[in-house]
Length: 118
Length: 107
Image (tube, rainbow over all chains, first blue to last red; front, side):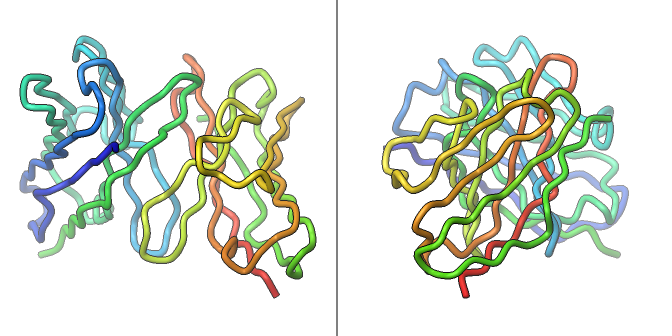
């Protein structure tokens, strides 16, 4: 049974950094691309990042490019999101999700809340 | 940037059919998928690769994608189907994009 558990969220001041983690279990982690998706309070879903199964390829939307970095440790079955230069608009629940063929995300974690506020 | 547009809300009576549209330029040339999100919960994939249902998703959920529009259809809608629904598409040029979301209300 696939299980994804995010951690690392919290309250942080604008301009500061935060690192999120996502512990994966129940599937062969090293075989799948992984994503981060966020949802601001009361808003829709926004894709944040993807990393290939071996970590060699990473892509981001313009809204976070240059500030956020996705990474993974396949030996620990863990996905990361390093968030730098945080802005108030980055306030959201951050989900990690497993990628599958055709570009869909077939399993999601429970999310971790990041609040950027002074 | 690529955009996917959904109606903000759809209302349906129990037992009837709900259809949710998702519009984007040449969307039919890409794979579309759909997620269901209930209040306070994480999204759940209900349709992938335009029309495939993941294991455990009821047969009343179906999908299609052609031209500029993908459609999620819920046949015999039940009260438990009340939720927000998001479409999503991907291709190498547009990357990953979510639709604006549709709130389905079962009256």
